[in-house]
Length: 221
Image 1 (cartoon, rainbow, N blue to C red):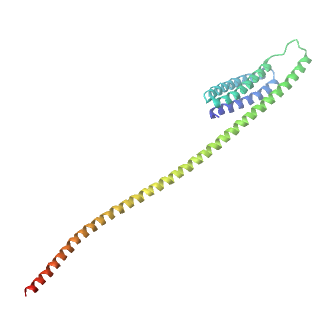
Image 2 (cartoon, helix red, strand yellow):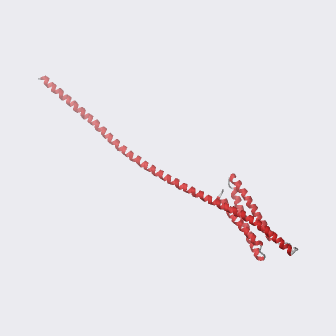
Image 3 (cartoon, rainbow, N blue to C red):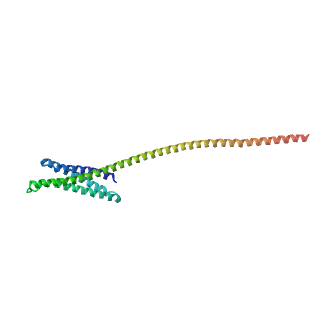
């Protein structure tokens, strides 16, 4: 469901319910008061038609799977608007002059009762639509809040993971430093060992030569 369409739908239902109440009030008025009320109703009808056009444009801009359902609802609203127009026409149409006073009273009472029943039904339908739209808006808000909370939770998890990665990176950097120092120590030890080998070798050679010289002198005497 398009949030833009729902916004237009909610405003149309509010106007439709208001027009229904105004039609009920205008039916019992006469003279200038009735003209003023009818003028207000016609102005509201223009606003209602404007929202009908906006809903139609919005519905036709959506995907086919969504558009079909919205256009079906739009047909109901157009029918509702046509009923309102018929009601306004009936209110503004004068009774024939040659009708007797009794016939006028009887006809007026019958028309008033029929109009009231029709308006009550239309008002009930409009109110139901308004309530349904409000529920959908509340549900959309709940979904939005849940989505926002989920997004915050994901961001917190990502932040914690980033901190863990930074800590691991620092740990690895420290390990690299220790490995580098250990390599230097091992290299120095290896060099010392090589140097010691040469020294030990020289000592051994010197001892062997000394022993040989001693043996030589003994044999010579």
